[in-house]
Length: 446
Ligand code: HSE
Image (tube, rainbow, N blue to C red; front, top):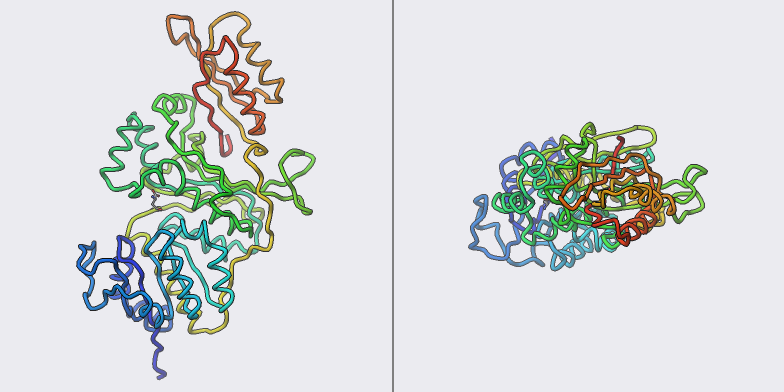
C-alpha cells in the first residue's frame, strides 16, 4: 500500500466561517483525506489576537500571529480574513510560493481579481472562491465548469441575505424599513459596516464576480451600476403587493445582443455583444420563483442558451454553511496537487464591453401624484410618448387627499434608462404633477 501524501493547509482568519472551516478540517480529516487523495494537515491558523473568544474552540497550538512563516510552508492557503490588506499581500505571497489559494473575499476579488488570477497563472496555481458569492450555494463552480460549454445570456438573483430579510419582513409582516432593519441588526445579519449591505455594495461585488465568470470578461465593482434599498418604503412595498409584485434587491448580469429587434442595445463588439451588470431594488412578479425566496436566503437564476433557465437556491451566509463552500474548494485544490498539472485560470478572453446604465432597457413602474383634473392623463401620456417611452398599463387610484390629488401608476413597455430618466425629469417639471413618488424597474418574465 502506498503511503498517502500530506498537504499542508494554512488558514488565515478564524472568524465565523474560518473557525468552522478549522473545526471541519480537524473533525472530518479521514473523510476529507479519502475524498482528496491526501491528508489535509491544518498547519496553523493566522489570528490577530491569540486570546480572543471564538465561535468554536480551536487548539491553541495551531494559532499564530506569524503570517509569513505559516504561508511559506503551505500547499493550500485559505484566506478568510476579508478586506483588502493584508489579505491581498498574503494571497500574492501564497501564490508566488506555488500554493493554491481558496478565498471567500468578495471585496478583494471584485477589486483586485485580475491581479490575483495573473499571479496564479504565472505559477500554474489556482484561486478558488466558491464562498465569495451566495455563501453555501454552489454557483461559482457551475458557472466556471458545468456551464463552460454553454452561452450564458442572463444571471439575475438575490445575492444579499440581509437586505432580502429586510424587504421580506416589510412585504410579509408590514414592517417599516426602520423596524425591519433593526431586527436584521439585532439578529447579526448586517455586515459590521451596514452600508455595504443596505447600499448594495456587497451585492455589487458578487455581481461583478458572477458577470466576470459568466461572460469571460473582467468586471470590477466600478463597472457595476448600483442602487441600494434606502429608497424603498413600506408604501412602495404595499403598492407592489397589491399589484401582484414583490420588491427584491436584484443583481442582474446580462448579455445584450444587438439585432434588428434591439437596435439600441449599447456599445457592441464585432460579434455583436455587450454586457450590463447592475444592482437595484426591482419589482418581480409574485409568480416568479425568486418571489418566494424568503428571509436571509439567496437565489440565483441563470438563463443560458442551451440549458435554459436554472435556479440555485440556499443559504447565502452563515459560518457553517459558508464553510461547506470553502471546503469544497479545498478538496478540489488538493486533488489538483495530487494529480499534478497547472490549474485552470480565469477565462477573460471575450473581454466584452460594459454597457452604460443609460443604454440598458427594462420595463418600469412609475408612480406619480397628480392633480385630478381634466387633461392631466393626456399631458402625462404626451411626456412619455415624446421620449419614446411606450405605456403598457395605467392605473389611477382613488383621490389620495382633500386637495384632489390622484395617484397614477404607469407601467411601461421596455424603454431605455436614459429615456426613462428624461421622462421622470419632465414629469417632475409639470405643474399638475405633485411628485414622482417612485420609479421601479420590473425584472423577470411577467
Ligand atoms: N452581508 C452578506 C449578506 C453576507 O447579507 O448576504 C454574505 O455575503
